[in-house]
Length: 388
Image 1 (tube, rainbow, N blue to C red):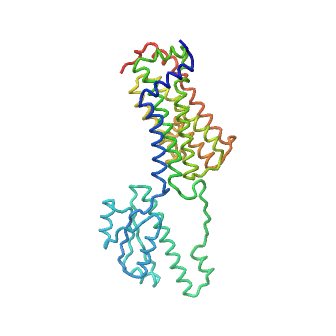
Image 2 (image 1 turned 90 degrees about the vertical axis):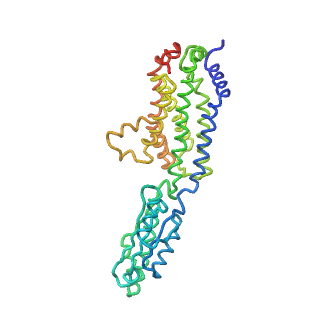
Image 3 (image 1 turned 180 degrees about the horizontal axis):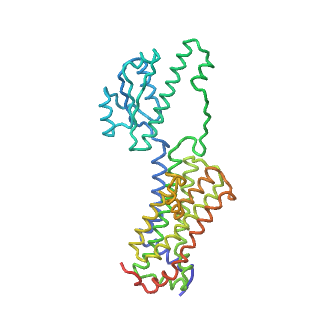
């Protein structure tokens, strides 16, 4: 009987093509993930968010404000209620994300210098939609105020330069680095898409090893490798590493070539970081099934662990703002290091000399299987180490 890495590899390839669940885990689900995130967020930012305007003044100025508010790219005026109560009811029934209230006598107070107020309400239960609506409405109203203020100053005989200096005494020159278009897909898909591929590599690693225990074939697997666990793991996991790496490369092609994600650094260095992250998750999968050699429970623990990685990675809530007691847990997840690599290499264009630390931490994850080697070997040989 031929023994070693190649026989284990051939054995695993036969298992992969003979069971549909393997094809689902390695090909169909990753392709669905890539397709979903490349099309679902293709607009970049939410558009045509429904809002309302309550015009209690019915003047030419209030109508101009209404037109300007409705002309923005992100918000669309769907309703024009006649009272605050009606607008509030629409928001409570989730028909609108925001509404603007123009009070009575707005135009007359404006031209007499009484500084009337325009009130707007934003619903923040849906954080992204509320933020987008608030930003757009606030920008439009501030611009309108500045325009009216300028006209009034010029009408009083003030010079243009002096009027502009009073309206905007400090000029702000802002530069958005990494995501100048404020594209929500650039921020979200760049981590979620590869992150889910990493999660699938973790789940599949636990499943293919745990199924050997569950169906009592682990002894044959170990014999095929010549009794060497490193050869057994290398031959079994190599096809999955290659497939998920190809899926990761495909996702990079979609993000960078099709969706035009910003890319400043060495893309091959980013590829290396992504592949190393896949291997790190596989090492963690071996560790989990080694600590608890029971397929059902190991899959549950692995899924719970993998999902928590999206919380601790730092791309939604920054790591530096987390509680001191929480920050150490961010180092338990390879996705955190992948996000650091993405920020350093792809966004900021830093070389390896300034981005090596996440690589070192990812390599450190790969030594985890050493701590469960003896426990796993006993489970593989005895077959009844832990029963479901």
